[in-house]
Image (cartoon, rainbow, N blue to C red):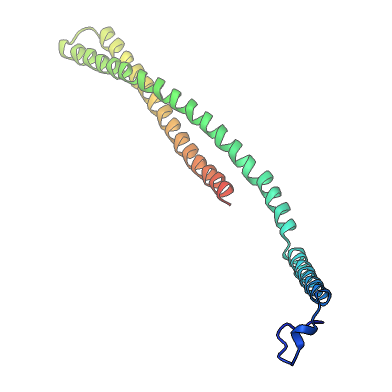
Length: 170
């Protein structure tokens, strides 16, 4: 510094003029600017080496390739699940009627056997019984197929939801 404010020599403070003090402050400001520029350059080098831009591009690409299709898959699976539930409720609505029809056919066959009626009535009752049993079997098979589809759809839905959750949390 041009003016030593902490100078302990004789008449040091008196020799410092206002102009010299101003030059000292200008020099100090220049030193701060130089130090600031050094920090700024170091920060820019660090940011350039860190690969944040590449990471941002990778994240954008991942979101487009994984997260968006996963969200669409969840939407499609939810629609499929709604269709399965509608189908399930339709089958459940028919099931009591078919069960009652089968029971009535069995009761008719039993009464025909007990009464030892003609073989035509017995054959007709047996035909009704077998038709009702076949219809009930078909409904139960369809119900099992719908149930399997429901389980598969639920597992796919949970997997797709997990993918969406991973995308939104990351």
